[in-house]
Length: 464
Image (cartoon, rainbow, N blue to C red; front, side, top):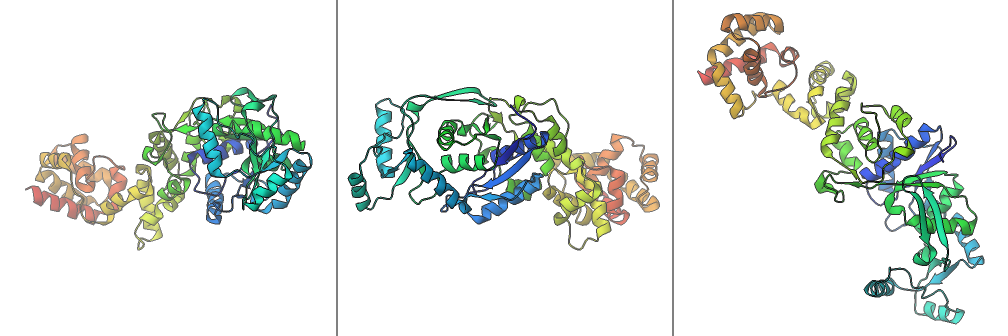
């Protein structure tokens, strides 16, 4: 049951860049908290010192801020909470709920393969569960560094209600004793994750469905420590359009890559909002309005299929919604350094609605400031059909009327008899090398009359 005082969290491990699945998890938890007037916490699960990197922690924070996901309070770093975990582990040891395990990874893998070969589900066989003190001493003498395993009850049911998947039941006998402390003394995910949620007052957790089977283990830990557990909702995984696991070959990129390419956060959050969450909201909305429309009851169980084309649709809408100043800031790195602010602003105003990404501005920079554009086969055909007289008339009209579009087109029409598409299409092709683009009236002003005349005259001579 969702209630107004909820607290959600996003708890990434800084072992790599955030991908779309991470971003959606963060977004959904933020939206849920915002919808209910609650809190959204950020926790960095960096207890694995070998794999965790500070550069990824920094990047995670930057990515969340770029998306517009602010968090409440200070960031909790698990690497700084060793004493908290040690105290809770000591409590479990005193209660006889954990024991040292000296099995090597190779021994565990062999055991796993034997279980699979005999048709049994793989689980820890309990090899070290009943070792006596002398046997443990012997293991230590061999140089083995023990992990700490939680002693799972031999029988019973673990039951909970998932926000997405409904009622869930797991047999204790199917789980197997699991590691709560690694051999290097650091707390394992199952343990630190549920402990931090409880101690931080987290009430609701939305996370990927690949964690669904972990929940039973975490509930066992919480019960043993007399902790209050959050309500869990396990989100459907994001897949490629064909249902296969999402990867770079399907167009999936990290948030850093998307950001550096020029994708807008508004486009991305609108796309993610509709991946695994059904909604009757079809317009491009700001994140606050998405929060109003976010409902856990609308989270779907079926895989969420990522379509890069649909992301491009939202990107185009987001680009179209940019103000002139926002558009200039977005594409400014692609413009010539020598361009003054007024000229850069005029360029952005004319072209930004014709771009998907800032890099697309490179073509139009060439059109406006560079040499005459190359023409494709269709363009050459269009130009030859118009004939040299048409382009001579166009050059003369611009020489007489400058960039007064109405006067220019009236003069061309009177001189050549062409109007409508027969006038605009060859003129656009001659000036830009493209069959589409911004309004020609605005385009002519930024190309300038002198450059347009030179381009038209050169083309007229070339086809004479």
